[in-house]
Length: 129
Image (tube, rainbow, N blue to C red):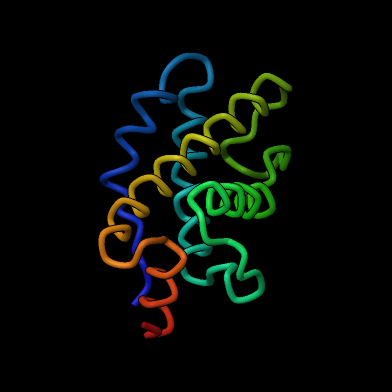
């Protein structure tokens, strides 16, 4: 069983920080998309190919890279797209915040039992002790 992202836990935090102002509506749509895509990272952890990812920092880097590969901020067909460089800058900050929330939350939850998110995901995903 893999870690399931609790949208009801994270969306209010993200919306309170980024869900207002000129880009508020687009930020909310991007946050939902980011959580949906992040679930893919948790379902298929990158540790299969790269066993050096075993710290909180390395997990954040890996997840941020995964999200930026999955979500094209310049894709005009996406409902969250806005055609300004300021939007892209704001959206990248939002993605960094989402990554921080996810890794901090699930790292803390798994740390007491296994010592790292990497081990927790392997244990949940592959039944490895």
